[in-house]
Image (cartoon, rainbow over all chains, first blue to last red; front, top):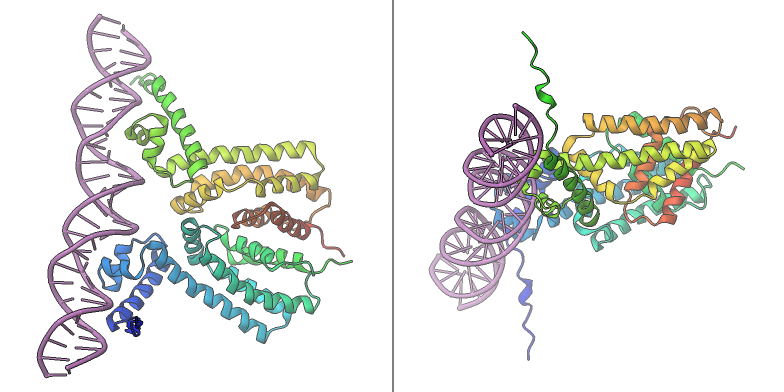
Amino acid sequence: MAPTPLPSTRPTRADAARNYDLLVTAAREAFAEHGTDTSLEEIARRAGVGIGTLYRRFPNRTALLEAVYVDEIQSVCDRAYGFAEKLEPFEALAAWLRSFVGYGVSKKSLAGELTAALGKDSPFFQSCKVNVQEAGELLLRKAKAAGTVRQDLELMDIMRLVGGITMARDMEPEEANRLLDIVLCGLRPASS
Amino acid sequence: MAPTPLPSTRPTRADAARNYDLLVTAAREAFAEHGTDTSLEEIARRAGVGIGTLYRRFPNRTALLEAVYVDEIQSVCDRAYGFAEKLEPFEALAAWLRSFVGYGVSKKSLAGELTAALGKDSPFFQSCKVNVQEAGELLLRKAKAAGTVRQDLELMDIMRLVGGITMARDMEPEEANRLLDIVLCGLRPASS
DNA sequence: TACGATACGGAGGCCCCCTCCGCTTTTGCA
DNA sequence: TGCAAAAGCGGAGGGGGCCTCCGTATCGTA
């Protein structure tokens, strides 16, 4: 039996690719403006496509949320590498964490709905976590090497604490900074 | 004009009071078992009443969530006063915070849905906050007086940090404790 | 017991998620 | 260029959830 010669290589059709982008963009905007509970009908309308088209790209609401979420994660990682290059170890770590809390609300609800749908241990989150971890570990490792943080720190500890600050309701920037200072203080090596 | 003599004092009917309790109980159980997205139809069924009855007591889904939530808050406050009586100042504070993180998942989603519905600054949350604050301030004040925590601490700072730990996904008890230790470490007076 | 006030229950309206399928557009090939 | 098949499109409609409305049943009082 001759194997069917590359029947799957037919490229994605141009209109399909275009609509995919339209949908993701529309979703990102809609979520930012009206929160993640925007209806999919509304998003399809914004993108100028039919609801059926949306559902072929994204088999369910969660899939669309995922697509928007991974972009956010990517930018978080990018910033980590940026800071690692430009700043002193502890400062790089601090700046990265600060950029977290200054970030905002949009992905709090995004992540919330995703965890509710997928479960916190889903492969999707595993893979997001791996990426963020890789970026964060770099910063933490440098700070440990410089001796400016406790040696027994685990990245996930820090992430959780800072994530907690982000989660907090009605946060004023100055309050967030004070909280972060407390955490950063806790990260420092114990004064003997 | 003689004021109408107490026309509003007619007591709640017996069946109404009974159904109210049935509904709150059914809701608490259902939320604990299946999460806060249990449908109201399901809760009414559990309680053995019609959906119309549920909606007369609780004009919307949020109202029912509120009723369950206030009970949780009450028990949090009660514990604070219990610890304040039995333990040393810092230990009482620590124990209270530890009881937070050891608590669990149920009211995380409860609070999440409520904030989404009411907004974080709603009168409802204001009043919950006041109660918790009052209980927590007692513990914090004692610890400050004993000189075992930083003098510049604000209760809300602590609450947010610890609340953040509670919010974190997939938390093992031992991890939670380590996080809490970091926070507690940060609360201590700066070693001069 | 009899009657008004109160409460009950569920049918049905509206909106949302998602599926299904007939129609249109694009693409690869001759 | 012209054509057939593959790929994609769109929206009607099923199912379920929240909530309203109103005829019926029950309670409490005279």
